[in-house]
Length: 162
Image 1 (cartoon, helix red, strand yellow):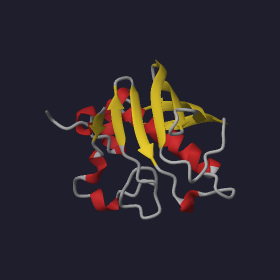
Image 2 (tube, one colour):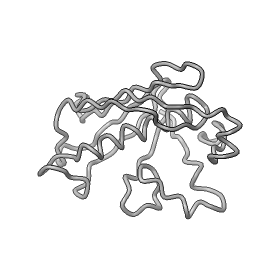
Image 3 (cartoon, helix red, strand yellow):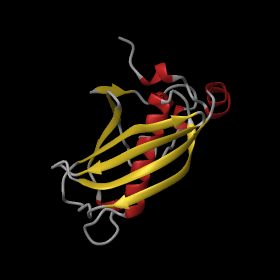
Image 4 (spheres, one colour):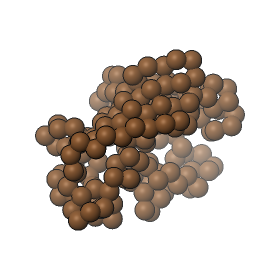
């Protein structure tokens, strides 16, 4: 797997970048990091007590946020643009226990049709069992608008130069 760089953490506005999903500048955030694994974008994340819902169970809203966040990084790196979530259908397959160890989050493109991308995302436990999954539809901005209006830095900014 190849590390994906978070390009929003550099430049003059980097200290203002507070994404709940991926910014280390957000003290209450998830602090996700991402990796490129061919067709998939992957993150490894350990549940923390402040994200608990029912006793010892990861809150469903946090699970949905994690799934949506991985989809955004699929859009940034695989669709090579920025976009916004149009719809998301989450299926909670099994409870995610807070003391169950690290989770693997995966996302990949299911289809792209002009300005609409469908992303499939999963949360797996340490044994590889699917705990939650989502079908996420993203509206894609054209690259020019993504750069001009939404601070999209271009796909090359997500990867270290070799």
